[in-house]
Length: 627
Image (cartoon, rainbow, N blue to C red):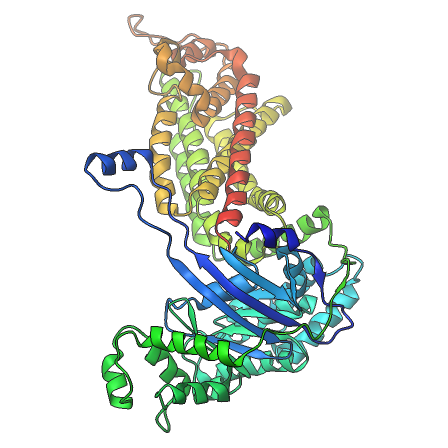
């Protein structure tokens, strides 16, 4: 967190829109890693065996980093792995809190809210909806990020202009899944350019790209810098052609600044320290290898006769710190500040909800054939169950057991198929949800996702509804159809809520399924199929109220068996006999007056689990930002 005196001085003072350039400065910013909280049991064990519960002070990821950059600069942030490049980028963008230090725009401490209005951030890992075309996603981003008074025609013109500027216009109607790596990078950049930011933070924009494609991407970024935008790019050992495209460079080592300034200044500084880059050698790679703590001794011995290899990076950082103190003066506010109040009227929640639902439904429609195997398997299982039980006569003693099996298998298929198919929905969408932070809130996303699950839930319900009517030869009167439809719908919604809740709160699907198994087993036993509910001991009988199986199976049984007034008994009177449907219900331990209580129980479970699911989604965005 920022120091108290800094927090009090934060404001939303940002440069006037009439001012062409801005200056960003950072002074002695330090970022420490958070120490993980340990469970009480683990602390007790450590104390019992003599281990300390305190693992020392948190590590410094950034250590008193200072510097500044002016608008129109294209700044590369380089360094070995773990040097703090991404952390510095995120700290300057105010995406993470700093432990100490100041971040200022034109001399004034900038708040996170103000920075979000004037800066764009492009994370390293791309997360885009692959089923949409490039132009569709651009229009989607414009609709959510621009002023709500902007017309659809104006949004379209802006999107076309940005695409033309970035060389993406020819790929406007291409599905994102078919774009090249460079085109995906430029599309992500285009999305950030929608709001015309004064500052752009790009994390590894050339990672995974060949030299030519990387140059195309940096060329697009360079054009933005030429228009006055201040751009920071974290980059790892770029090709020499790419490196020369930057105007300034920040070289990091172990969370400290090894150099910050122009490219020519970097050459002079390292030469002054005795590190002269060999001819025809990549200068950027040379600096990074010098500062790497691992496997650099042979390289250094072969390229320089300067001071000892061990502690090389620390010595360079110390030298640059002394060099900066001797030669540099504090950056001055050359551009001026005025207070402006944002006149942008963001779209309301209903508009955001419409666009998120639109995107989800388009993805569902275009990936329908990709999910054909899943749907085919579901249809096949429903067909097999129906074929196995077709012709069952519930008015005979042999048919009683068959009908009970059909009802229970129907319950199991609906619950298991719906819940476990949803488990992988949230993890697959989470990167995009984190990437689009700021476009819409957790509530909009969660409700839109639930709406997107409705088509599949309806498909599941109708499939088994038709199967059961055919297999059990149910009468097609309106009231019976409505009761069964309501029951199936409530069960499907509850099962979907169960799966969404688990996948929202637990990141790893494999861990989620392992946690679901014990609950499913208990819920399974509470269904009344294996145990008469009425004879269950009081200390465990309350568990049935936490079972989707119990509510669904009892409701289906009540609807079916209350219509059976008479059942034929065996000729042998010594054999047990159910004389009517009510006696069958008694055999379960069910009460025919519980139908609406079962419906209420399913609705209540759905609401509670959806609330838990929403809290899980909200927590994900709070604790795991995609920077």
